[in-house]
Length: 125
Image (cartoon, rainbow, N blue to C red; front, top):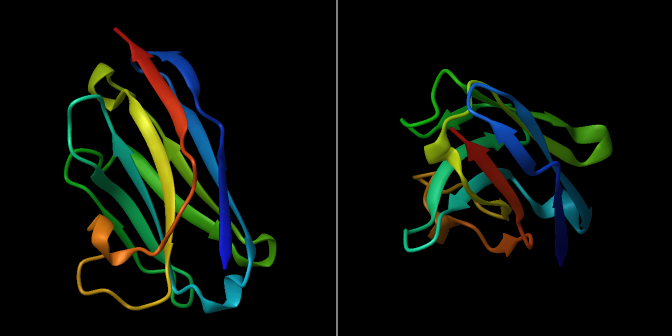
């Protein structure tokens, strides 16, 4: 089993920045892919960014490309999501997820088998 704990959420004004942290524990050697997702009330869960632990390849959703950046520190089993130029529409619960496999579509929630509890991000305009 893999446990994921998110932190770093909070409230910020539009144009501001936040950095989310996903700390993994347990059988982390089995995970190949870590992603960030978000879900706003009444909306479907959306893939924000993903990173392959081995090669470091990254993927971004179209709504955040150029503003968000995903990175990792494998020695610490930690993945970060740097969020810049935040907009009101970025307001959501943000979840960290991990996958044991190599999914064809890294930004699809169904590709992941481990999930954290989430951290709330609120952006005021």
